[in-house]
Image (tube, rainbow, N blue to C red):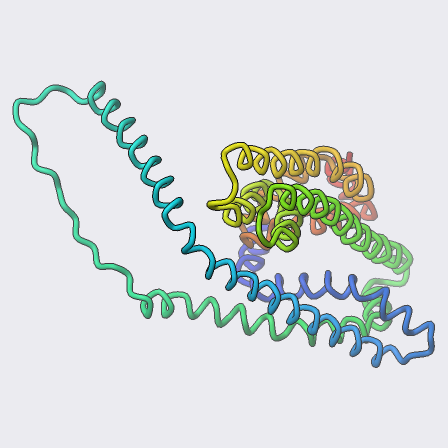
Length: 333
């Protein structure tokens, strides 16, 4: 088990790229199957789906980049408001520090000299060179995603039958059912997340529009889908509207933004997610929480996204293996 965990950690980039490509393949599978029913060859349908996916990704990236540039261009208009707010916070923090120091510090006759540490400011070239290795690996992995998705879509039937044939004949029926249940689980997981994300985005867009936040239409979408990330989602979802409303939204508006984002996150994680996602996956909250902790430790942010389908697939496998049914029952609800 220790060797397996170490191997999973070392193969982080490969496994994350593979599983992310698998999720994208499941997203595009209905389109490819629909084209196949229209007598379009599967290879041609898969190529069309991948080209559509890449085009959509490039278009969304260009759109969001343009909106981000526009926002950064307008940000200096509110620099005075930002500075005054930060200065007020700094003064309040200084007063708290002084009052705390006066209570805790022991009386001294003379003042001890303060230690001064001189640090070199990080140069831009040094920062870029420090992160160039990781960034290069991520970009290289991203270039593999379209090819992996294409081959997964093209070779779907072959991969399914070949996976089943890996097992002895007496276990192939069980393997076929296991693979089928895992496929159905992944489709349900993706569909449920899309539905919940769209509901959150719609509510966020309406609230941000009523508050007069610029670019509410894309800030609301970012906030709505970021709220789906377990635990960290509430922090990721609240940053875009607060940054977009700098200098335009008053204190009551900030409170409304916080209540909306936190309320949507609580509603999503405690009501919608268990009802829509958990009912299909049949996992208990403790198992989900522990899996989120484990996979976040192993794979970081992507681990939070992939943790739920991974533990759900583990439960399905345990349900079909007699020595592991106890673990499957523990993971279930």
